Image (cartoon, rainbow, N blue to C red; front, side, top):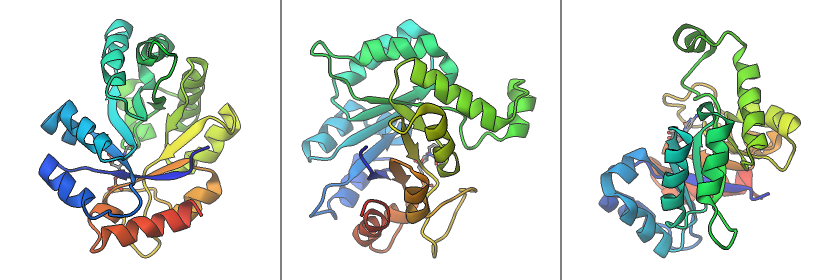
Length: 232
Ligand code: C5P
């Protein structure tokens, strides 16, 4: 599996994004474009970053009726990103429709991964707001299993769940894990964090790292440190 560091480019303009990416004159990092940047700049930001030679994870977390998701995925597939995602809560039917939409005429498609439960949702909120009365761990593994059955490639999950996801869905089922911090760094608003080295040990396939790189004094050095700790 890949084993790569994905930088969360959580900027609100193309200008800020390019000022950041211009610092990387050597290895071109795998980049995550989320809702903030995509809604600010539209598909052109994806094309521009792609043209600069970066791999792209388009993190738009689709969740709608199967037909709408299928058609939207067909449009996103034309952007030629490397990875995109949706909410597993949209059901297996929605996920299977997404795969159909994403698959190009020649049979190729970007990797598709599912969000199980957002890490901002804890068990208490899940019970109170969503009326789901099962332990959150069980819900996450159930959603991951649904994603696998629908033909998806993996899930976004907390690094603490990555090992269990692999036990449940097999080692080839990809785990993409945010919530990564350096041992000597600030944890900010993330609660359950791991270092890149710990994420590697537990079997994450990709780590998504935002502020520890984007807000670092030397972002390139911070990125290279992540790569050293996680990939080497
Ligand atoms: O700055 P930081 O390293 O916390 O950024 C993590 C990135 O991963 C952000 O883009 C955040 O939205 C995303 N993410 C997350 N937790 C999830 C899913 C995505 O932190 N469960």
